[in-house]
Amino acid sequence: MTPTLFTDIYSSFFTKITDDMYMELSKAETEADAKDLLMNALHHFEFPRVDIYNFDEEIEEYNIELSIEEINIIATYMVVEWIGRQLANIDLTRMQYSGSDFKFTSQANHLAKLTELKKVYTQKGITYIPIYYVMSF
Image (cartoon, rainbow, N blue to C red; front, side, top):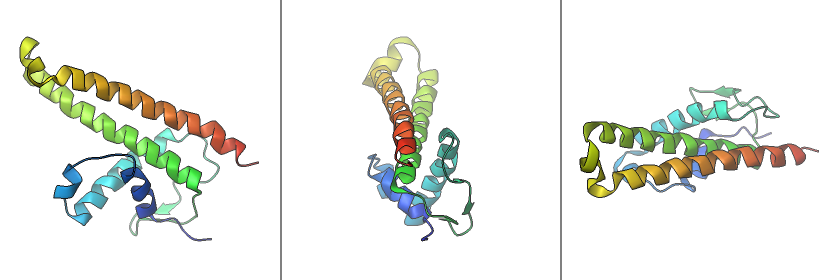
């Protein structure tokens, strides 16, 4: 058994998104942010076959080996959390402006697209779960 490193999950997450913000951050800052997303994503994963909370947070390593499917499901839910963060930022922008001011750079359209994208990734995670269970037999 090879314990799964948090960086293995981060790598899967970063293949699913594009965010220029991470280019401006140091490696330590990027990993701290990814760790935050990982911790927030775990509660989405219902009834995993393994204890997904069996990790050493200090050394950022699982005490067990996660399967590729488990890593993919967690990374997908990290995307859901990441999109939720984007939506929260746009909602704050919208609260600062009213009416036609909010439409100044098509923020409303961007918000709608992000909301739809969050639904898509949430559904992806939900879709992966039955496949994950079937593969266990």
